[in-house]
Every structure is written in C-alpha cells, then in structure tokens.
Amino acid sequence: MDLKEAVIIITGGGTGVGSACALELAKCGARVVISYNKSQESAFDVETKCKDVAGDAITIQGNVVLDEDCRNIVAKTIERWGKIDGLVNNAGITKFAAPNDLDALSSEDFMDLYSTNVVGSYQMLRACADHLKSSKGSVVNVSSIAGIKAIGSSTAYIASKAALNAMTVALARALAPEIRINAVCPGLVDTEWHSKRFSQEEYKSFLENYERTVPLRAAAKPEDIAETIIWLLSSAKLITGETILVDAGLHLGKPM
Image (cartoon, rainbow, N blue to C red):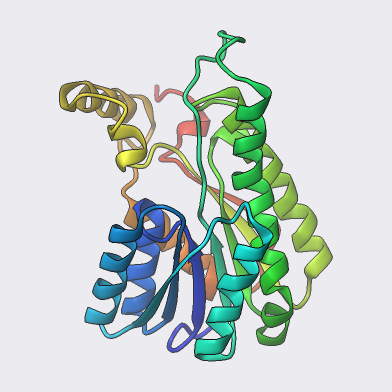
C-alpha cells in the first residue's frame, strides 16, 4: 500500500500508540482518521500535529463498543475521502488486578474488557469491510504479549487479548485475499497506561526493572509500536494472520 493519500482509521487515536501511529502515518502523507472515545483534547491536538507535518486528518468521536458509533466513524470517513485503505484497531481498556485475587474481578469487568478489546475491533472491521475489500486494504489489531504469554494487568485483560489474537487469525483466513489482517503484541510500552498507576519514583523503578529483565534491555516507546504497525499496513504484502511480538524479547525469558 502506498501511504501517500491512503485513508487510515485509527481507533484510540488520541493517546499512546494510537497517536504515534497517526503522526507517523501523516508524515508519510496519509489521510488519518483519529477516532477517540473520551480523550477529546488530546485527539484534536494529534489532528493539529498531523496537519502540521503535511498529512491530513479528521477527528471523530465514537465508542467502539457501540456498533452504531463504528458505522458512523466509517460513514464520516467515506463522506470526507470516499475510501478506506487501512484500519488500526487500537482502542483498548484494562483493569489492574492481581491474578491470585479471584475476588478482584467481576463478570462485568470481563464483559467490559471483552466488549472493547474484542467486540469493538470486530465491529470496526465489519463496518469497514466492504471499503477495505474494494481497496485491498490492511487491518492491524493492537493486541498484547498478555495474549501470548498469559501475563499482564489482569486475567480479564489476558483473556481478551488472547481472544483478539484468535479472532485475527480467523478473520485473516475468512477475508483473504482482499484484506490482510495481522496483530501486534507489544510488551511494556512507556505510556500513561502504566505510568499513571504509580508515583514518579515507583514508575521509574518499575521501568528499570523491566529493562533489566528483557533480553534487549529496553521498553518500547509508542513510536516503536507504530513503526511495526505501519510496516504491516503498507509493506508486508504477503503477511496475514500473524501476531507480531514487539516486546524486546520478553517472551524469551530472562537474559543469561
């Protein structure tokens, strides 16, 4: 896919990995749709930055849990640019809970995470599918190492990301050859997702411990994940149904 003037929708595009994707795509000349649920101020800030680097962008509010919102995001995109070339399903939520505390999660917690992390991604793809078939487009689901190694913020989160990975494979098979669908599975990404849980000193210690633990001795920046997403969107023309681990080797275990 030639990214110049390509139309890419990014859910959860106002913060973290989503905002990094938007900005890097804009630098490539893409037309970016920044979809957000609650992060209005930051989403509009990302739109301005995208336009400043010679890309074009629009910001659309929508909750991916609601099918009508997903269809509205797509309708407004088509109204503006008449096509969709790519989708980045980045919207996601979690709840932090120790895995050995079985009372820390309710059935509602599981359903909330599943509704956003899995069903929301499905609904966005369904809303975009006809347009992506026409453009022979590409989809990237932002998953997590949690879905591969069963580690992470909570059992509910782990289960939702494992489901997203399985769905990626199933839909890649079902929608080929017109649409390629892959997932990226980051390890720790240095964003507010983690930093807001801790004091400044606690977070520094948390980050340093991670970097001592992984073979490549580094935590990812949002731009690192965006780089892989953009490669899957634009260049990986024979890759579909894959889950790409971007985790500095975390899945390999502790370095020797």
